[in-house]
Length: 191
Image 1 (cartoon, rainbow, N blue to C red):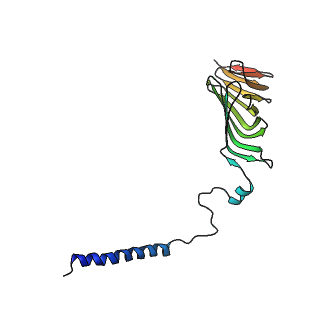
Image 2: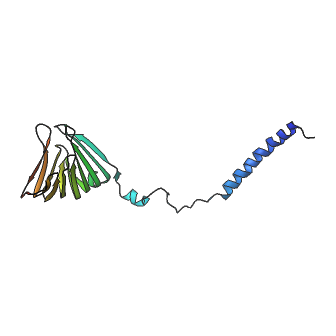
Image 3: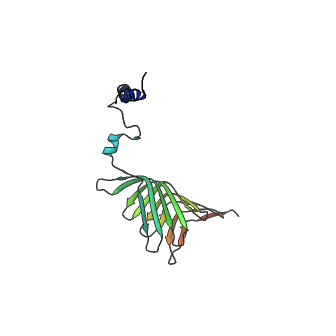
């Protein structure tokens, strides 16, 4: 008759050997690495990424002398040979007045010009109180918290639609921002 201690003694030898056999089978039957394959979670070509340096998800924030907050985010920014930002893709800029009123600006592309940013590609400015301004190009002054458009702008306001030859959004002495439309302003009033 086999005693309990003999069974335990055999199991102490058999169990580790069985585990070793299972692990050996797993390693022998596992996939072999393919040296030519790319990293499975990489969406870009590594050689292109190494040759064309870029910053993904850049973020800029600052405060103007009148207390307005300026934030600028983008999907990607590419520097030029000197290290300055040459082009910025999928830009979102938010201008917040000291009282908390916000204006959001979305653009397809942007380019840094000193303290200014030239925004192009279906540029759209929206405010919290229902104004929407579209133009082919805006110039944003990051230091002063200003926006200007030298080409025709189309405005949708709560009271109707406006068209103007140019536009300026600038801060006043009290910290508010004034939207100045000029250059042949046309208004279609919709009560």
